[in-house]
Image 1 (cartoon, rainbow, N blue to C red):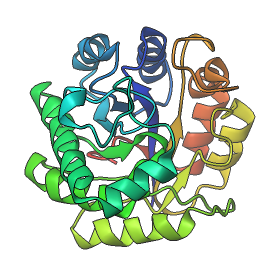
Image 2: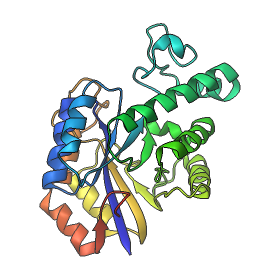
Image 3: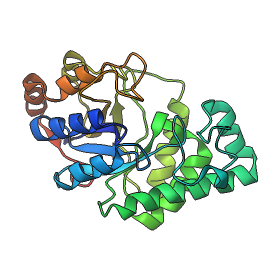
Image 4: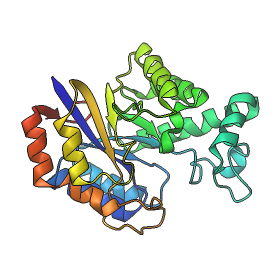
Length: 265
């Protein structure tokens, strides 16, 4: 059986993203969205999500390119002088791994983001992290530990068939680790190779060759390409167009894939 979850990341980052999520869910194949609980348009995203009960909403854990949910003075090891998460993921990751104080602050921030999601009242469909930072072993371990208290049931491990990546060994470790905790992980994930450029033609090709088992295709749709916080050179509007393309939906039907959220797929 082919089961397919179609996810939009960065839900709550901007109203342009939230608009695209609603359009793609109501008029297209989008079945899930990953919420940035501390983002500027999170309240607007929550309002829309509560009006779309079939949309599986998960936590998009943010530890880079943004500000923490906790006051910056409570997580000094995670932020720069402006109170933002450090942009250098390699240096930030090293501090998280080697420095006990930073690990403790990281645990507190992850807990705070899980708690903020729980406070929305939405069921937790899944968890992933901005820029796949959950491939970091310390972050992955904390997600598993903290998530167990919040009903964590599904996590993304970005392993794309036919598109080998330098992160594959870490993603495979994450997949094995979370499955060992009884947490669902997709067998295949699509969106890495063409991140920010998931056009209708590319999505149709992916769906036509969809493997058996549970697959996830993730997108970054928006109604504007230039919203504050947009991806560099990302074709956000083209990704929205792909999600509502009738030929893409027809390809899903032709492939015999069952669409759903992680909770229902």
